[in-house]
Image (tube, rainbow over all chains, first blue to last red; front, top):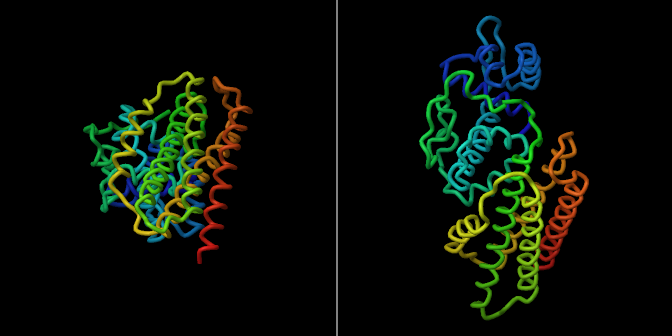
Length: 150
Length: 164
């Protein structure tokens, strides 16, 4: 998963949580980057037709951006489920974020054949707990700032 | 989370190698089951039989190479028996419908394994981290496995073409 995918996924989840545009500050916090870096990437996403930014309101994904975000989220969700349910990794969130940039969607889909595929994925992902709802372990709600892996 | 994060710790590397073992086990289990299923087919296709036998042997050998690398890292890993049991349970219940299914499935498995090693080698080359294993040796081993997966993809593709 590349950097743009990580951004659209984060915007998608923030839009769900905020029920509206994702603020640049919240996006920077979630990705643990500076607001300046977040702004720069938002500009790139806009030029690629994946997002729209409105001053003082925040960033909203376009239809194309939503498709991309849902694909990225599905890949992430599979990695999380694989780590938690198959390998019984306690720190599955932190590890999933570490592995996310290296695991391609093709590879994730193959890993998914070992776990039970859930047709509703990625709607099974809960942005509040930052975890898939089909995990064998109960995911506790993540406090702001606690969701950083590094 | 750090955006664009790359491989930089023994623990993360061990986890990725473990995922490689899972993918190899999928190839091995799948080949084995397909190979077994061919025993029941009266017109035994020797070419496919030889290909699956070779794929299973090669995957077992890749798995051993990956396990050897994990053993040299300063990280805990999931016992292979646990992974093996899980993959077996999943694939023991599925049967291919015909020879084309077998070849297509084999192609997907080999392609996925190739993509995985290719991404991992790319991530390692992009990282400046040092591990308990010598980086150059690590990359050489993974490149070797990746090339064998590429050959596997080529062999399946050729066989598929000759059968059309």
